Length: 604
Image (cartoon, rainbow, N blue to C red):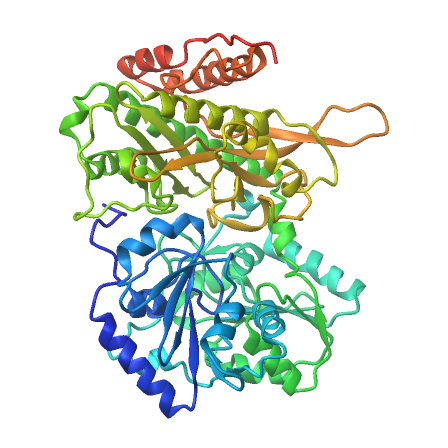
């Protein structure tokens, strides 16, 4: 059994010819340009091969970004996580690399097209919010956004794969902590209270959570690709290929869930009586247009499942703790094995394979994302994925960044450890210590109810900022319970205004990346929990779920405060106590050494 492929990304091919074919198609459609997003109709992080239009056209295989093509210009827009990757994968003679969001698509289009230009887009692949934002940016230019009935990329993609039809399965009610009927009744009550007749759901993880089902349409994310309409009486019309659902699963869903073919979705939306709740941040523009065409009263509001899904039940939290126990054992066995090797004889792929084999022994059903195993300069590529052509042998004094996770039947994990393989450079020690101190600051944080991720993001960056450093990604993302490893809407980032609530699970992962040299990231998953407070106040804090030692060999102990060292020592003692009984003697010995207490020099 193997989950991760080391083949070169599926972005190869004659991109110049594909670009020429697309431009010819646009001329026939009387379009001056076209937007090619990374997204599918469900706005998921992972897309099926049939929806990998951006990779097919440009060669860029990152998990976020988009392209815009006109008759004489073309560009791929990516954020800071992918600046190195996009330069490696995309032919600059065909596509310019544009820093997004520093450059907005509307600003680029203002410069690329004359007044009156016509820019096409597929309304199933963009949210209402995206389109409205772009229209505001184009206001006054005469440039129009034109929704197309047929995607021109699909029209020139001769061997486009078929959509996935992976079998779905029931998710145990005991692991969910609530039956689907209870969830549906709770959300239906909310709809009635708001005077809404129905809600349209387009996020597969929301639908999978609501119905207590899991799927195999996509790798790494155990969701069922589907759309759904939840009525105010708790009935659900589920639009997904019926071949995914066997008799046993249909019995699990019950007679209040009707399974309908996706081809019937448009007609069903045209027939809905409102008010219909629909989320402009997540639902496709096409769904809004169908409801508007029918004259249906639209209630713009968040997906009704998105916050209840983020607030994990006691059963989900218990499952996540158990999954992290097993995952921690796999990680400790890997790190103990690595320290016992002549690491200069190993490659990145060797370590990925070893870790995957240990996770399979621990009971994973899949990995939760492609393992990032970045040695030396490869660690500076934030979302690096090793391939046979990029595979690097470990250097004697490399920093090795290991970002990985597993999907278990009862939980989802995501952990990053950066290992000093030899003698770390002074710059690496400075950066590593600053990253660690930021991670500890988040772990120790206490804050009043009502605080959002934006309010605490700076806690993780403060020590890097003191050295003039920073990182171009959020400090933390939401995590699903036996669902998607990246889950909205909660985040720890400067852009997040979602309030943190008890039961939410996030990553805590500050980092630092020096292109061409090294990358550093330290990541634990944390759950929001109630914290002690004076009478009349409600305070929250974090419980650390991840169980694995943090490498102490690159710490500048003179820069670590006594309180920070105390947190690290207490964390290591907990890791040692929970994991040691399940390890053999060599791994126990390694763990004991890896978790020896350290001192902090300063009192701050």
